[in-house]
Image (cartoon, rainbow, N blue to C red; front, side, top):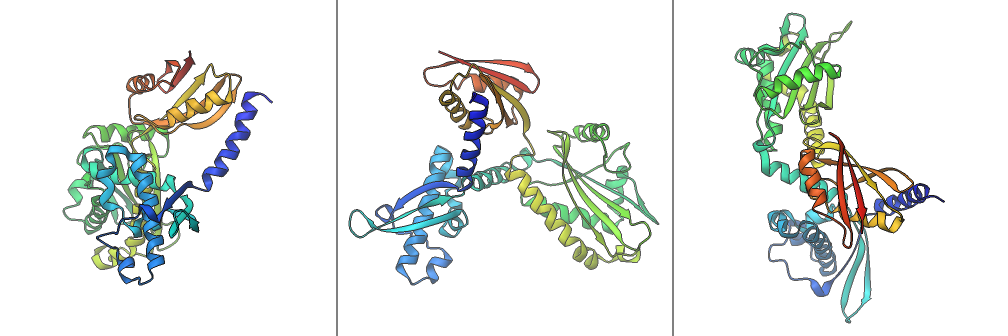
Length: 373
């Protein structure tokens, strides 16, 4: 079996193990009484149940402390037994642990979801420093035509634009960010449908250094009485459409002047928008660009795993995702908000123990890393 096939088989097995979660073992001998019990702990009179809750908390806190290192103090205030409960996959209670009278909890926790949570908290803390959304509204409803370039000016007299702006602001405020309505020319009359139009939109956003574009599009449903709303989120970093959520609304032209009705019918759409937005931030897809990373001169699976483990620690880039292997070469994808020049320097500064590395740029999105003794 050649190295490529061997890696593929091992990768499948590894992914199956990862799907079960990160293993943990914690003992009641490490438990210190929580001076600020959670609501569920305060209501619980069963000492063993409380102890299990404390052990789950300890497992999650230990993992976060190991993963975050010195940054753990920034996140410690969020970690409670109720929080920890959400990230425990499974567990077993060992009553035979030593010393006598000690309870041991063995199980698996959801490390991937905890990493996503960390990224979401990071994004919220950075707020407007990194999240600068441009807001655009367009409409082709009969008797209610709005051009994107009118977003700022029409918001003074259009109730629907005001409501859309307010509801979008409410969701982005959770990430400590605010919208900037488009106040200037726009050559697009509808959300971009192809790469060329996306590039046009990105150039408009770049005028004000906005990093995202939230586009609310109102369209008439042909042959019916409903109104369609779609909320698009475009990312200026990756220069693509990140997501779109929408729904058909039972609204007449007269209803566009009813603020309570508008909020009621728009609420489900904006809840979907908030969910997708937080998912995008937690998965770090909004500010990172994909790069191809080719590891070369690898003559054994052991060395490849050492290289992969070393790169998985990250230094301004995500853990590598395996793509393919052939001969002594393996290809991965990584994501980073760094420039390729800085990314090259970071990888060069993280060699494997006992090895030297050489990083070569192939183009603006591809790096080759060669390891040698």
